Image 1 (tube, rainbow, N blue to C red):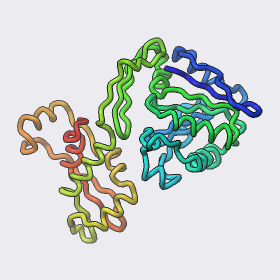
Image 2 (image 1 turned 180 degrees about the vertical axis):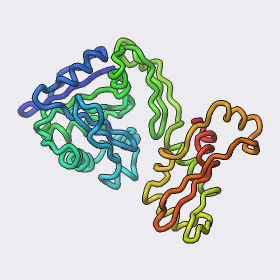
Image 3 (image 1 turned 120 degrees about the vertical axis):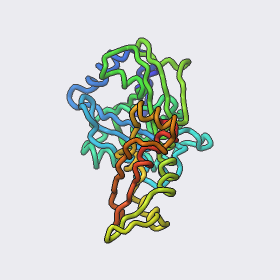
Image 4 (image 1 turned 135 degrees about the vertical axis):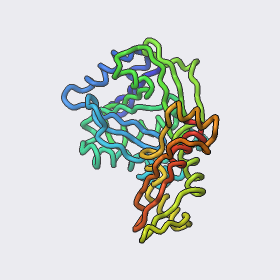
Length: 294
């Protein structure tokens, strides 16, 4: 693990530190980085971004990473370093960070130090762009990059842990020893929230229904799917309604399939314009079973 802090001088930037440290000392440093004004903490994820102030128990805001600019929504590769090696669009990130400071944190950038909680697999080009925007354009005093997996050990006050990060596109398991990320022992899988959402779309196309006036039900049509995608209904369903069943029920399903005498799973309803989207119990249960995340 390499914790990197950058500060803004008169006409140059310089590296303050690039050394490994224990999670306890790093946590103490973050919480006391500025005694007068707590540092801003920003974690940029593929799907969601969390922002707030050091020392607080919950983020001030959780916003969509891609909602600021269409290019972030259409080209998530810039967050993964798969954009041909070119640097991400500076104007997009300038607009993104400016919105965080002025709309959600209600704070002047030049008055706050910034801590970026980053994925250990984040590309160098992304880090350079973030530094350029924050240090040169928004004039923040300093920027520190901290691995997200190391931050997960802070609440437990431990130097040893195995952190399993279930993200949008992948799941990453990484051991922590003496406050150091063991990069030679990490494991990754392509099973993530995106896989669940894709499976949920398939099941809804086959089994989902819409309930209109008079409790009349019909199958989903193209106009319904336009509303579903516009309102991010798939994400809403995956967070609120689908679940992992008990181990006993799961074993019974494995032995007898879904043609069994178990109590049926109740269906769920979500508003869809002036009508309601019906999510059958089978869909609520099967989305995780058949996506491999049960």
